[in-house]
Image 1 (tube, rainbow, N blue to C red):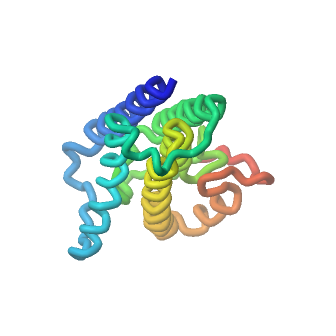
Image 2 (cartoon, helix red, strand yellow):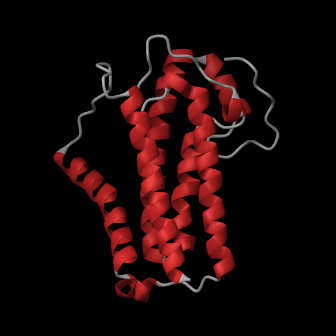
Length: 203
């Protein structure tokens, strides 16, 4: 049964990379306004490690799982299948949010000259549903692998990346939209919906 979960995990990882690659190529490849940010040498090295380490450990788990038995978790098959459900829910949310953003999506933190504040679809309840989807999809390896090292690296990297992106993007949106964005923030949650948020119907 473990081989089945390893195959599922490999397929999900390839699907996630392909999905990101498709939209990056579609909206970013020929965009001269794409944002480039300056980072110190230390920051670049830390970022490189954070990006490379989880896939390397995942690859090791896929091809030689015995080497990581020391980090194994006691997880039943039911919970491991729940990990697949978590990832599929994340992909559904990701595509829904992607469709709502359309050409306003960017992998980099920037706003277009004609950028619109999208508040339809999942954006009626969440300000960052794409990052909510990332957390769902990239938390799934913890259950699917039944390995705290594999899962912990993906969750840790995702949380650090999402936190940084949200801080930057919300600062840009607040500077552009001011009180309109503040009002929107009061009605919505960042990555989890507010229990008593009001409906938002405007763009």
